[in-house]
Length: 334
Image (cartoon, rainbow, N blue to C red):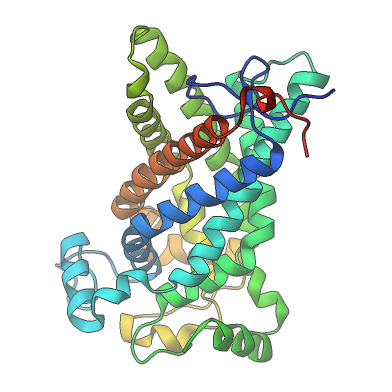
């Protein structure tokens, strides 16, 4: 009988573990979805700030009188004054669909890939390099699955007042009728280019930091595992985001193509002919620093998001394990 996807308790590791307690592939997907849902509620305001900064052509500085946003505190105050508290959760419905779907596909694929690597290659499932490759491939699969929702989320977070899209259905119908089905996959190329190293490095650093923490604090109490998972996940998110941030910014610029009329209230707008054209225009008009606009809220978001994702995922998997009877901890994969 084949084992299901395994969960080491309380090892604090994601990925297949042949010595751990088992959760099925479907349960890994459920845990991934739940972790994405809870995390999205908590980090949505930072995501809105990041997107607003990424899409602003003008320099993010109070010395530029034409810039709408100068910094995080000023942006928070201005968005609140002009659009109200709910503006920080603009696009929350498509963002939640994105998080739930991405979390399910990513963790389900990651667990399956690490198991395949363990069973059919000479590599061990918990090797850091295995997590690097499998994490990138899993995120790539998840990105393709949820890219249309990601584009919708970006459009909602980017629009000002008055709103162009009244609700999710109106946005889908309008975009399809005026721009065609291809518009839902705008920015897919930089997404795939960016997501492999970002997610791969995220799992890679998380694995290394977990191993280091267990070596540094071998007598850590069992009830401290949650804090360790949160800290290791946060550090992994900051490191991986810092290395791949420019690609995420280019993706956001491309996703709002054809949506320029809704951006008029925010300052200058640009039309890009594709990935390379966007890079060329940004380098010419905004300089190298333009590729790091919105980095501060993005790093904050990455720290909270990555930390919470791993924290909640491990917690939900742990809960699923404890809900099983001893006879069912080893179960056939569904």
